[in-house]
Amino acid sequence: MSQFSFVIPGEVVLGAGVVNKLAEIGKSYGSKAYLCMDPFLEISGVGSEIEGLLKKDGVDIVKFTKVKPNPSCHDIDEGADLCRKEKCDFMVAVGGGSAIDTAKAIAILAINPGNSWEYIARSDREFRTFSESLPLIAVPTTAGTGTEVTHYSVISNPDIHEKGCIHNKVLVPDFALVDPELMVSKPPKLTAYTGIDAMCHSLESFLNVNSTPFPDMIALESVSLVARYLPEAVANGTNIVAREKMAYASTLGGVAIALAGTILPHGLGQPVSGLVDMPHGASMAASLGHIMEISYTSNIEKFARLAECFGEPLDGLSTYAKAEMSVEFVQRLLKDTGAEVTFGEYGLTEADLEKTAEIAVNNYSFDLNNSPLKVSKEEIIEIYRNCL
Image (cartoon, rainbow, N blue to C red):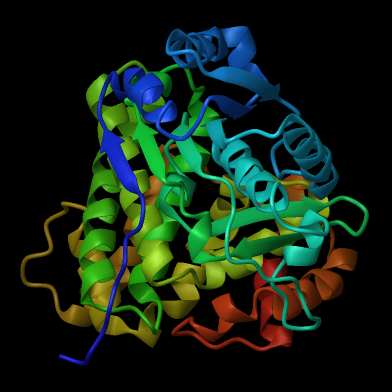
């Protein structure tokens, strides 16, 4: 076995009702919290519950709810101005990946100069670096992004219709409270798209050419959980067992990509998401099935191991045949959960393909380089064309 290392910073508590630990955890970071929250949660009553938990132990709250899917760098900059003005001690992020990624970026700007887009990592220009950010407690309300355990913050720039990633180990939340009871109200389509995102994290980290045995083990467990429980979570959102298993799968997928990273589905989905404001999970789902079709021969052994995670009978099949079956199993999961979608449904056109491929090459070279299937810009355009 080759040498490898791993670090998992931050603490995670997972299970029904764990959100009630927020008060005791929060007060250990200070007396003034910056609450970054999905605006929908104020309507649902979850926001009031969160505020009550923090105030119970005398924590003052500064609230920011200007959170959108594909978070805008301008909203983040506005939120950071408020955080600095109010001199908050720590961040609490409640919501899906957008809320937590927004909070991560605000946590940077609270104690570092510049604007959020200047911190986006790119291969075609210099970008700002940093070594500290405000402490952050993450409370995810969807099962998919795994951002509660990653060192990534993905944000969008609406002026240039691009999406980018800030990455730094200090962005891993100091504490994550993963409570499946906060996820039961999520509608089927959102459950499906976020669940496919969790599947992509696990698949991609496992197939990443830089992966090592530890994230591989985590990723395979996550794939198995998503394969078994996502259809039930979509069909019956109140099934707390399915919600709990998906919450766990999502967190595992986040750990896996934090250790190994993503590849083609993210490298090609993110540019589309930024260009046409496509939901993140949908942008993964749009190309996942096709990418599986064209890439399973790039690592037969690993694709065969993925097939074994789906709980289907594979006795007597060769390794090659199992690898082929992994494609069928993933495509079936997309269909069974209603996650079959195309880029064209969200507005991508033939005229956009050249520009989108260029963004993929410049902004997501790390995803492309780490894929077992190597693709040129022309081949990326053809993938997009097949997924329109």
